[in-house]
Amino acid sequence: MPEHIMTCGNHCFDFQQRPAVMGVLNVTPDSFSDGGRFFSHDAALAQGRKLLEAGADILDIGGESTRPFSDPVSVEEEIKRVVPVITRLAENLSIPISIDTTKAEVAKQAVAAGATIINDISALYGDPEMASVAVETGVPVILMHMKEAPKTMQIAPVYDDVVSEVGEYLGKAVENAVAKGIGREKIIIDPGIGFGKTIGHNLQLIARLQELKFISCPILVGPSRKFFLRQLIKPSDQQDIPANQPIVETATQAAVSASILNGADIVRVHDVKSTRITVTIINAIKQARQDGK
Image (tube, rainbow, N blue to C red; front, side, top):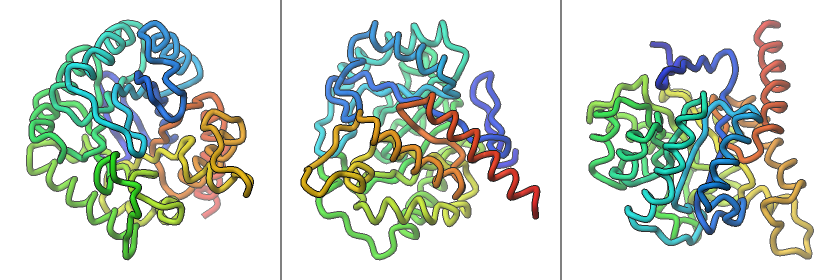
């Protein structure tokens, strides 16, 4: 199967036609982007429906914050947060649901509840049973690069060449997944914008995203509301800008545009409505460039 085609449950994505928009739904009390607004099940269900109506192609649900310096939660707590929400949304939504977790048991129960993608920021290295869950369920997996763990990843990260090192890591992660029985056609890679990277590292990864194409897997990029964007646009006399400010969404759409122009196949965002407009325009520009060759 060509690398730009991916099946997910009853859905088939052709990334050559248009990048997919993944909407973020954090069922956590300490999300950096929404301050825990969707922690209750009713609020999470309402937000999931809103993201679908706004045009999301995939819904990514997570029950553990991965913001810098965050603490992990137990398997039991994470299951309690996400599985009831996935169960209800899977009954009512017509798009694939992704479970954002590093824990095999959470992934297993989430898929049983209706999730059809596993989004593992540890690239299958965090839980030795995660690859088995992916093989047994047959769902696609997202493998992300992260330097250290969320608790420590932003403590002075250093690379000689961030793009080549991230590419090497992801290439090995893909081969590890394939060796454990996961089909290459079911693997998506994510360079991990904001995960163990400085502002410069994140900008390099977006600018040189094409250099990751050698791995021959769809590329997901998640710059939405990240700290490096807020630092780039903040006034000099201010420490930070709250993630939910309109100016931060403007910055996000600029990063989404650059990511798509440089090869992103999926963009993971909080504001789906704005992103669908961005994707439409940038995709038309890309198509015009290809038609003009």
